Image (cartoon, rainbow, N blue to C red; front, side, top):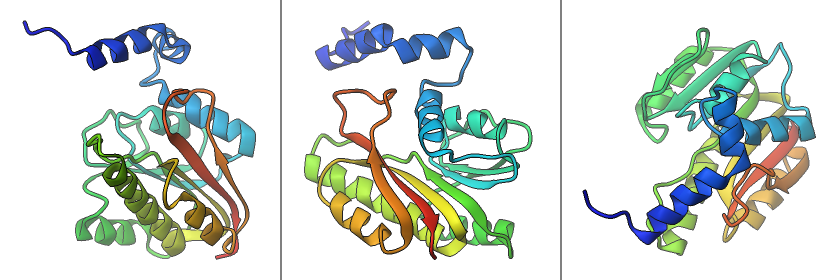
Length: 204
């Protein structure tokens, strides 16, 4: 067996020492991502039992399981397989594809969403500019879904990386939502550039 790289060893050690990873294992959760959404939900009161929610980048399902216990309808989408809770509608397809656009339109019909959530991230290349551009592209796709299907008063939450394009996204959303804030949940890795853009109470 080949030796693990130093970066791989550091990642494994960080996982082993991380309190949220340990809590997820102890509680039988799908992933530590559960705690990120729980913290965002607590801070912004995002969820209630009557909501329709679109979740983008749902695999491996940490957020999906959290949502399934708290809202009326969840439409989850990811290119990867995942364990899908009972009543969740799962679209296993590429969000960038025409197939996704057509299928979502078919599912939604005349209904509208209360919340669009995106935990999507690009495949990391290590080239910071390229990774940032990839992240913001996914943010814009999620924002387009909000423009199309979010009801007035609805909310949008997107994962992004700190860097180019973030300030512009915030400025644009402030013309469309009553409150916009960038947040880094305690459950996010401290040394990562991961943040969440939270846009509350849509005027669109």
